[in-house]
Amino acid sequence: MTTERIVLLGGLWLDGSVWTGVAGELATRGRHAVPVTLPGQGDGNTSATLADQLTAVLAAVDAGPGRSVVVGHSAACTLAWMAADARPGRVAKVVLIGGFPSDDGQPYADFFEISDGVMPFPGWKPFDGADAADLDEEARQAFAAAAIPVPEGVARGIVRLTDERRFDVPVLVVCPEFTPAEAQELIAAGDVPELARARHVELADIDSGHWPMLTRPTELAQILAGA
Image 1 (cartoon, rainbow, N blue to C red):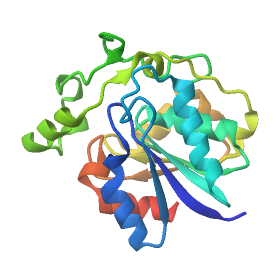
Image 2: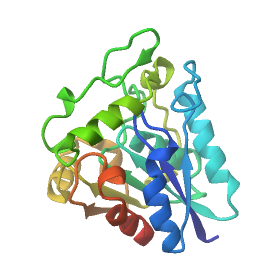
Image 3: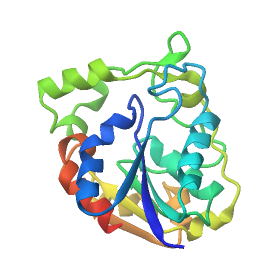
C-alpha cells in the first residue's frame, strides 16, 4: 500500500480548523490532508471520552485506500501513537509536534483544573516563555476566544497501548519550543519510554512556539510533506 493521507490531530482546546493553513499548503504540494475535529473539541459533545476520540481518528485512518501519516500536536501526540498501536499496518508514520506519547495506564491530559465536567483553557500564564513567544496579543486573544473546553472524559481518560508492533512504526518528532538535542536527551534518558523503544525515530526542528500550525504553517507543511 502507498501513503496517501496525512491525518491531522490538534491538541487540547483545538478543533480541525486550526489546520486550515497547513492543509492548504499541503494541497499545493500534492498531499491530501485530513484535519480531524475530535469528539468533544468542536462538536459540542461535552460527554465525549478518550475512546470516542480514538474511534474518530481510526475512522479517518481506515477511510483511505492506502496507509496514513498520523500527525498529533501536543497532547494529541499520545492520540496519534494510540492510533499506531491500534492500526500498526495502516499507519505509515507518526509525526509528533511539540509533545511525546504517554505510557500505557497513564491519564491522557490531566493537566489543568476541571470545572463543570470540562477542562477550560487556563489562560496564558502556564505558557509563558518559549511556548507562546511567537504569538502577539491579538493572536493570543483570538486563540483564547476560540478555545474549546476539553471534556473530563478526554482529559482524564486512561491511555491503553497493547500492540508492540507500534514500535515498528516510524516516528518523526517535530521540535518547536524545544530543540532536537533536548528531545534526544529526554528519549535517551528514558524519560519518554515509548520513544525509547521505538525502532525508527527522526527529529526535525522548527523555529516556533508551541503552535506552529498557527505561526509557521508553511514551514510545518514542508516538514509534513517530506514525511
